Image (cartoon, rainbow, N blue to C red; front, top):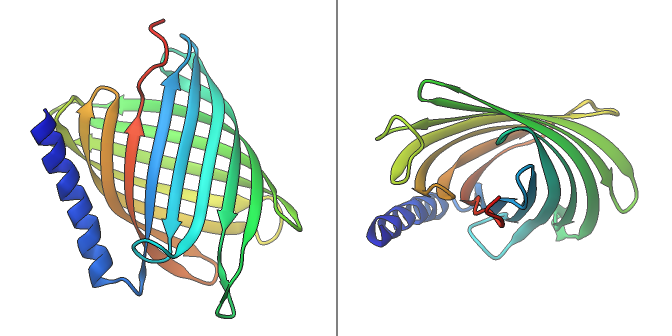
Length: 225
């Protein structure tokens, strides 16, 4: 088990490093941790950290920390969640690096379906964004698909393909905010943990930029109930 995990992890990180070395000037990198941990039969704690860079590492673009409490309307599915996000951004404006902080409250609904080998997830999220000099509201729709490769199910020691599309719509003008398209290779470590590495293209009104993404997912429950 340990050797398999080590090889898979090294392979995914080597893939990411190769892309970054080849296209450092054009490609950003996001390193992400996602936790979704049961705290009771119906309740779950969501927690995530995303460290986003303009290049491989060191030139911070954005640090994002999110947490929230969710409630399962049906067992392990149809989850509603109320959350909070802290976002530190360091964009370049006219060649100079600046800094701004955003506090964000969000509400979301997730539902999942399975068709044969296809694992679908829909996520609907409404965000209230408290920026330093502004307040905005935004709606996001995420459609994700995981497909196991060497097994018929998402079992331990399974490699899988992952794709998603997410569109962001402002409730004020301009309505279109951005669209993200993603493809990745993942590995199921055990029933509660998996890792993923892939490429995401983010389309905004005036720019289009690619990101290498490396993510770790942790679903270890905090309770046996």
